[in-house]
Length: 469
Image 1: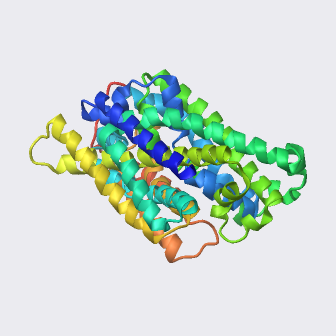
Image 2 (image 1 turned 30 degrees about the vertical axis):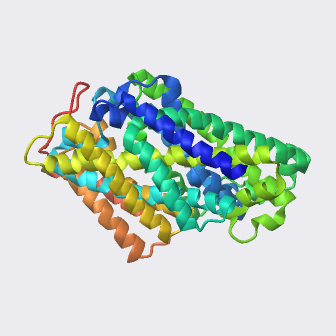
Image 3 (image 1 turned 180 degrees about the vertical axis):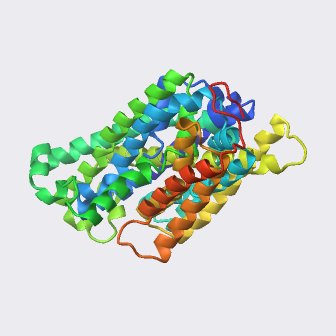
């Protein structure tokens, strides 16, 4: 019955995506849903940006190992990203009428900066997509006994299909439906387990106080690591195509800003449920948290809950992961086709051919991520690694490009290249005792400032509300 419910759910999702494909007429419809989403769909899409495997499997697993202090990156850093994007970026970027984030670098800094930025924008998504596919593979492994790699292949096929045919329209509509299922499934499971454990206060009272530590000790290295954890998603995901495309799909700049705030509140609230559920699991069924803690929740649900709860839980898991995966596949595909391939074409592409190119790019990135997912299995690490590159290469150029008139094309390129090289050096060559992203980000910012002051020539146009790619 459970397997049948999962199969029906996957089929229904594919059908919704296929239905949404009727709205896709242009590449703009495919990438940004025609910039027409109302606040409910836009908020649901932004909420679903990261609410996938890392939040449900990865964060709950890390929380059991090290308490609240171990999950600063997600959900807290992720919620911070949405708030900051709404405060400082959504309105400005929306008014530029851009198709991709790579277009910002073309408009502001010129074609060369666009090419380099796009190289740093697209590849990190492979690891992020792989993490979601691993999670779906784990679910199918627990439910059906299939090998994880087989579950990965099935999951990749389903998500890739409805993303390929429906683009951002399919993603937005399925995100809204899936968000409802996520909240309902996790809430019901939390209530049931809490009741078995003696209530919320009893569960919390039995947790060791150190597991609720939220602030770092007053030591330089620990403070640095703490700030780095906030920054991985909190700052590193600001210059990312998936956040950009979800916010820019809104019907207006005001809707984009409001959706960021609503999504941040919803994300931080709902993300507490998997953490609480993991505490209940440890208290009620401690044997399930030994070994691979990524599998503790699904194994516990299968062994100790009714069929109805199982259907809700696994439905919410699949909803969370599929909604995240689909957007993560579309994001690099849009960058790859619009900002890497299109500028290299000698002849101008029609919009029909551009749409086909973007869809083929969806297949490319899905294929690469599927191979990665079959080779690695640590969800939390895969997701974290995918955000660091954006922080050390693109954050400074985006922020200063928006808010500093003297920011130049040379400064942006120097910032991106220097940040990447610095991260490689501090990560693999020089041990500083602090996360490599900290000195690399500082070097990126300094390079942006110095490069702009010494080489003030600008390869793009001056920033304005009416700028277009």
